[in-house]
Length: 152
Image (cartoon, rainbow, N blue to C red; front, side):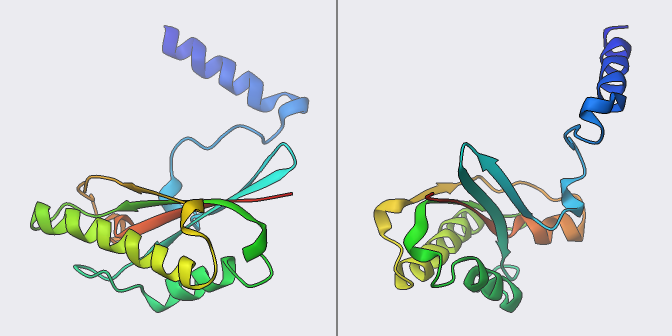
């Protein structure tokens, strides 16, 4: 009954003219492009992911291009902070996957530092590997999620 009432309230809220289309998407992030822009009190937080080959800490070409696009020379001086969140698929050897998570984050950090972002602006987080349900979800888990804030 409580669940039904919750869905009813959510439906009413999403269909009100004031909030038309502003309900948050709670599931289905796997189909997103992994790029979001969020405005927070006059500053912009951007988020995207870079993918890695299976069993490797080598960046995919498309991911390297995305990294270069987001951290172009025009924006480097405006970066307030960068957060790197590494993840991996748990299939295979767990110790090796944990090592890969750290290596992948360090590879991204090395690129950012070589482009001029100060190491003290970079925060690193290493997630434990988790099992992907499909080949596509396992591919998406082999990633480093990057969040950065631009100073205004």
